[in-house]
Image (tube, rainbow, N blue to C red; front, side):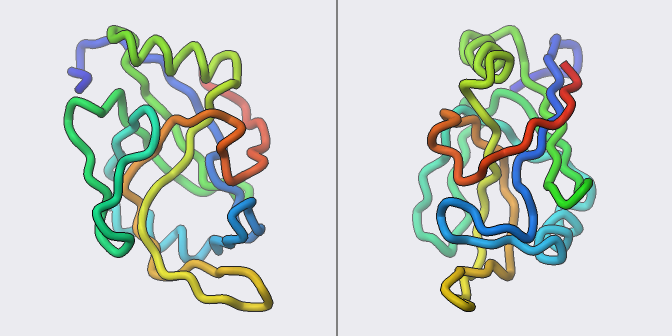
Amino acid sequence: MASENEEVNVYTRCVMPLDVVNRNNRKYSEEVVQTALNGLNGQPVPVRLGMPRERRPEEAPEIHLDDIQGFAYLSIKDHCLVSELRIQKATDIGKFICKGLDDKTLVPAPFGTGNAKPIDGVNEISDFSLYGIGIIDRQRSAWETPDMPTGK
């Protein structure tokens, strides 16, 4: 885990377009995501390489301290969940993440839990809780993520 004195790279990205159907046939409304952000009380969420394993879909995913490569501050802007990622540069995994984010082969993806209700053939998510950001291969992303200006 990064200490306050460690150097970090900062990236600002849209990690989830809101009110659109993603490749997993899910739709997250701006209202549902804002409620999830309110539950975080402005606290950052952990960033890790890959997605954590879930014990059960209704439970929070298990995140080990050794997996955390940085933190993300989340907000909503222009109908997108925006993440200010702060990735530690001192570790091999941190360097790998930064390289992938720089060359856009890796993308940030939020993870959490929620309920899906089928409406007109689309699974609309409700009761959503956000637990973190996983850095994944761009081709595995559930969204066609628009390029947002980056802070790096």
